[in-house]
Image (cartoon, rainbow, N blue to C red; front, side):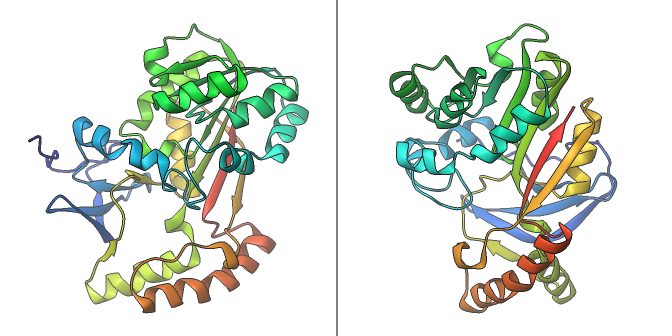
Length: 299
């Protein structure tokens, strides 16, 4: 059995040795995966990281059939109704009306609902998707061209696309730098990268909780397998994009409405998250801060 890598940690984004503890952890296969943060670039990551073999096991068919592929837990990865519901026409209209170019690639395109909606708005579309079942669904349901694998394996030509969209993908990648540098290569000059990522550690509840748990010398245990290898906040996402040759043109913060949040963990933790979500909803709506979801438009 392959074990997780447990070499002394340096930041996987900027290489800095200035690593600090974060008060959360995953328990996975009798191992404790600690939350760590980089004092230089601000990214939060888990250590040790799963091996490539363990990652493949994590993303089995059960993962895609359940709800964990999206943080809202809204149905299955290959369920057409779920994917259609998660497609955001406002985002596509904003891309079409505010940026130039119509050649669009979606990395992690699932069953193809977003690509199909983009095509209906006039985009020329292609997809990349790891799940063979989702690739088949995208081809059969929508007649889409989808590469089975990751974007580096696809070997697109330089400047092949005007827009690349990645929704709920970046936080799962063990090597985000390599993927984003590949995206930079396949985008045309002045091309647009649109990134949607959960930012759970950016919320008011998490920020206050980090301080409380840190002061008590305790760690919160995440009641999930370690799907999210990284947690991004606005500053760390900006640093990563800049390192890969991008300039952020827009950065939007959103928050899951209080009546739609998914509650896990002990009763006191669930109550605290519910109560914090209401003032957080006001803060995010009025000032665009402390959102639990980030959408970056990067040139």
